[in-house]
Image 1 (cartoon, rainbow, N blue to C red):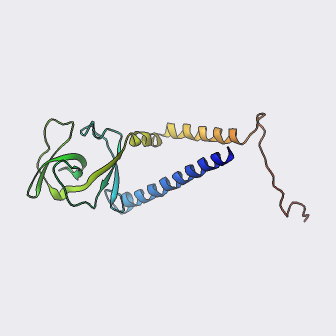
Image 2 (cartoon, rainbow, N blue to C red):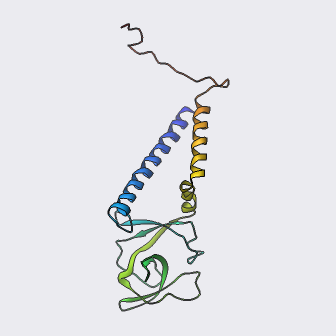
Image 3 (tube, rainbow, N blue to C red):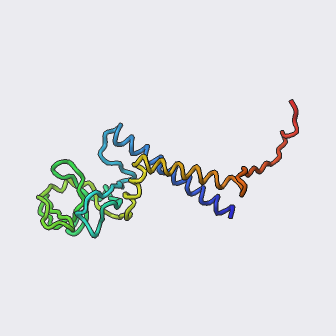
Length: 179
């Protein structure tokens, strides 16, 4: 049991460290360097905020796009800048010369013609509902609740049945020294 708890702690600490490093990297890219997208080795992560691609991609999904890809075909799901400079993820329905026509799977009509050079990347993978889960960490009330639960959990695993702290003192070579 002790090994399982230590293993879970190690995984949890690893995930927290990776998440913190990514958040710092993301903050520097967007706020300091004024980039609109954070790329890691040519891949970017975006949260889906509209239902235009349902049922393929749902609101709250996190998608990974390949920003290095330069070949696009009819049927590919891509992320591009629309005329307002926003990210849009839709499917290519037609390509003619340097122009493309895209359409959301859940939309009735196609988007307006767009230059292919507006493409940011090609959709390659999604993590269902991760965006909705991560939204919990944006709400101060939920963050406070998570903090309280974490403190209670730490208290419970460090006390015995009577509420007394579990202290395992290992003697060391300095215990008997007097100054």
